[in-house]
Length: 116
Image 1 (cartoon, rainbow, N blue to C red):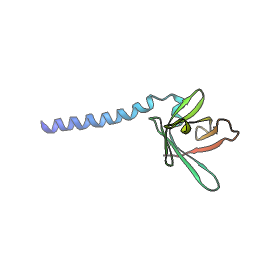
Image 2 (cartoon, helix red, strand yellow):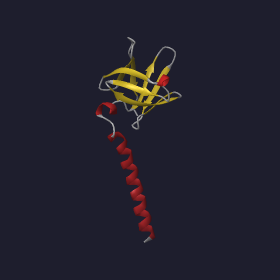
Image 3 (spheres, rainbow, N blue to C red):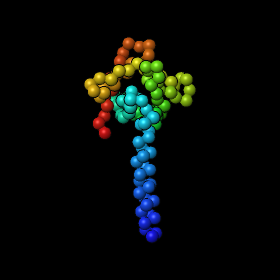
Image 4 (cartoon, rainbow, N blue to C red):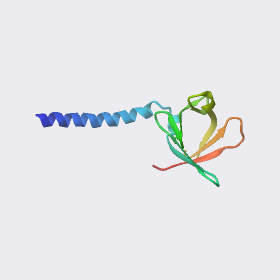
């Protein structure tokens, strides 16, 4: 009897773990889901690596922020207004390329989605 109870608790814990992982992306719009994952951009001297998580957190090197799609822009929000950035964006090549343009500039930077 004790083994059955332990087995039931283990199965419930595993099921709950699977279900909790699914709810994170349910809170995202279809447009926001396109951002989820790790993206890289390369220049001559360095590589930029950034990750968009389903819980709307964003990480790039040592920078951690929140992200959202608002009014057609990608908005990265930090703890202060100075840490908030807005970008025009568009996806290409079946959502494997994310082109970001800092609002107020003319240059788009292409980021390639990393296969996980």
